[in-house]
Amino acid sequence: MREEYELEVLERYDIEVRSTRKIRGAFFCDTNEGTMLLKETKISGQRAPLLYMVLNCLETRGNVKVDTPVFTRDGELIVSSREGRRYMLKKWYQGRECDLRQEREVLRAVETLAVLHNELERIMPETVRERDPVEEIRRHNRELKKVRSFIRSRVTKNEFEYLFLENFEKMYQLAEQVLVRMESSGCPVLFQTELSKGSLAHGEYNYHNILVMESGMAVTNFERMHAGIRADDLYYFIRKTMEKYIWKQKTGQKILEVYGNTRQLGREEKEYVGLRLAYPEKFWKTASSYYHSNKAWLPQKYVEKLQLAVKQTEEKRAFLENIFSISI
Image 1 (cartoon, one colour):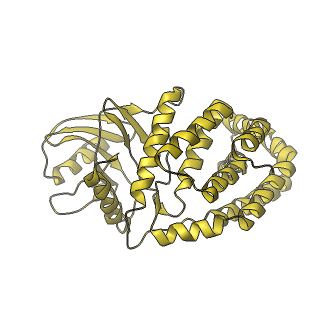
Image 2 (cartoon, rainbow, N blue to C red):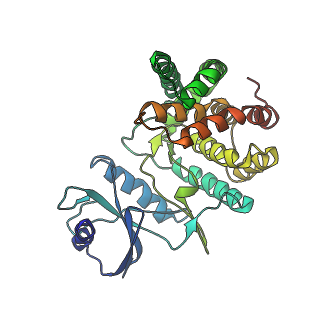
C-alpha cells in the first residue's frame, strides 16, 4: 500500500514516467526527461527553494553535475503522500557510488570537490544556516562528559561502557587540546571570512553522495548544505577515506595535491583541516550514538567502532605530523 502512495506522488509532476525501480527508501524513475529519483525528504519547506536555487545555478553553469529538484505542475518542490510522508523528485544519473577502495576514484572525487568549492564561492544565497566549527567542537566535548557521567552512574556496565571509561581520559584530553588550538588558530577568522564571501559547503561529501558515471562524476544529496568553511568538506572526505586506508600518508598527500591543483588551499584552511582531523571524531560519534540508543541491547558494532577509534589514534597522529605539521 505504501508503494502505491509513493507512486501516486509522481502523478503530481508534468512528466511521463515510463518505469520505476525501488531501491533503499527511494524510486528510480525512467521519464521522458531522463532519469530521476523520488525520495522521502526531511528538508523543510523553507529550505527547499534555497536548495533549488543553489543546485539550479550549479546545473546552469555546467561545471558540476548535481541532483537538482524538480517542480510539480503546481510549482511545488515537496509533495506529501496520502499517509503524510514528504517527498522530493530530483534529477538523477546512471552511475554507481564512488569506490573508496580504488585510489584513482578517490582522487577524482577530490578533484570534483575542488571544482564544486570554486563554484560554491560564487553563489550568494540570501539566507542559509551557518555551522560554526568551534562551537560544534565545544558541544561535542560537553556531550563526551555527559556520556561519561551517565556510564559512571550505571551499576552494571557492559563491554562498551568499560572500554569507553578506560579510554576516556586520553581521548577527552585530546579533544580539549584540539578545541584550545582551534580557538587560538585562524579558524574563527576563517569562518567569518567565508561567511562574508557567502561561501557554502556541501555538508556531507562522502562516497555515498558521489556518483561515478562514464562521463565523470555527479554530486548528490545537498540537504545538509550550510554557510561556512568550505574546507570542512575536505576534512570530512579525508577522514572517511583515511579511516578505510588506516591513515596511509602517501594517499593523504595525493589528496591534498589533487585538491590544490584545482583550488588552492590557504594556510588557514590547511590548518583547519588538520585540526579537525586531530579531533577524536569517531570516538565522540560512537559514544554519542550509543548514548542515544536503546541500551537494553548492545550491538557489537558499537564496541568495534570504539576499538577502531582508539586503535587508529597513533596512525592518525603520525599522519597529521607528516602531512599537516600538526602535533597534539
